[in-house]
Length: 411
Image (cartoon, rainbow, N blue to C red; front, side):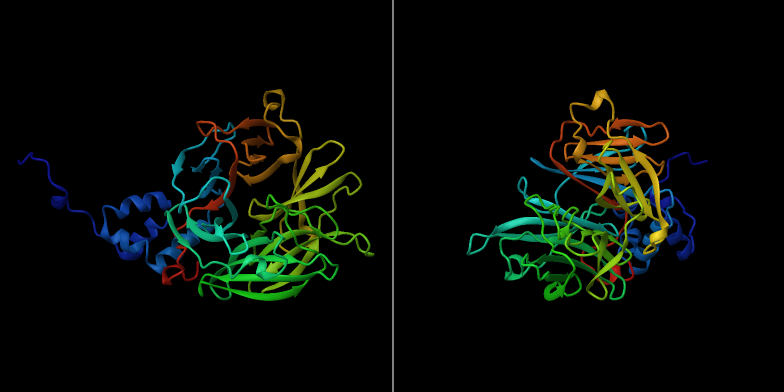
């Protein structure tokens, strides 16, 4: 008997039907598929095939345990990115992997506009124009595949209108046209609520200008967060994307008969602003809405109790239905004496839910805590060395390309 080891070429592998082969690979994480590309031409071709990209994406949507959700921590000083995978209730994680920025970025010159279907949208300082105004470029990046694309620049600062204003932003997917869109908008503050918008289409790689009328004024402060005043929007500058629309928290003018807060949405298909529905029935005497988020697969609202500083987490279980708002937990304002050096009571923002029900909180861009509602305990997420001043964004693990060629159709 020949006892010599056989080479790879001599080993006879079973030949699977193509549909079975694709079905097996569609259940693998992107990281595994990227590794297989290096050793198999068939896998390399498959991950660019439009039907397989859609199949893999559909599998991602079926993941009820959210094991395919990733978090990326974007440091601004110095510039750095840390990709963090599955987290547990004790603050541990499967991997914290440093990744390179998709393009040259200087400290404090980057803002995350949002994420959608595995793509992250960055706004990055580019240059100064003839009037010494800052000019920003936009970048789409899939951190899972490392593919990125620098987009066409907007035509000018704030549409040429109100050049001293800072606009609000949104990023999302238009199912009707199979297109990814970026919006930025700003309002006049003369009481007319005349709003100017720029819309970027990834398919066209171009910006368009339109005008709209709103029941409120849109403007952001220097830090990219929306000012809290009436009339106005009170949320972070980047809206929350779900159900084909981008959402912000809107406050009516206190001089009008109806002073209630509502959720304002921008429909990416019709390209129109719409008022969605009233907010949940929280205790309005002692509480106020603070942040819109996307938690547990639903549009969510963070409500702060002014008496206790505790946070209530509400989720809209049926999109667009007021009666479906459900308070899923109340989070205490004080995480305990071991966190007093880093805790800033007014600036912690829940931004993600883990598959085990734990909640991740952004501590003013300095640290991340994880809250376990069952044990009512807090833990700190350790990313290795000290990494101050970061932005954080959750995204899903997909093969979707930022180039929106035929490989992305239907995703």
